[in-house]
Length: 131
Image (cartoon, rainbow, N blue to C red; front, side):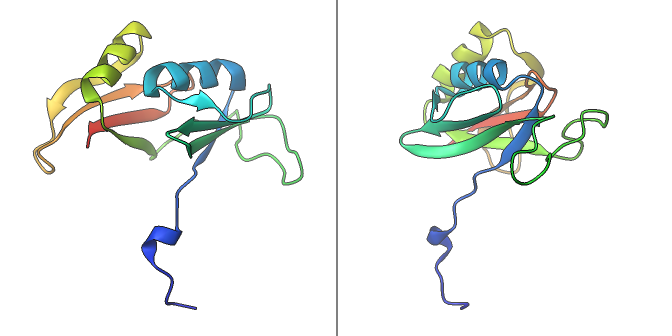
């Protein structure tokens, strides 16, 4: 059981959002993603053929119950962190989306890479870093 390689594990975070369609458009614009599912209750966001994240409508329980409580603060203690190949292009898309920037483009002293920190439409902290 313990012999599986790390490459067989791929994160596919799912976050609760108020409006799946609006959140999907925002992430598509900012990250250059495409819709892998679409709809008002659930979405998969795809980059280079890989699902990078899922969006789920707060009040919708499907078969598993709701995954978030809209009466509690969203995303406390969570940062959605994305590495991108085209950092400059992503920063341009962030500016075009008029995204709420928390910390502008800077070099992370630990990694030596440039990054930008912002809030999405539901106030989740989103970090975009160059690869």
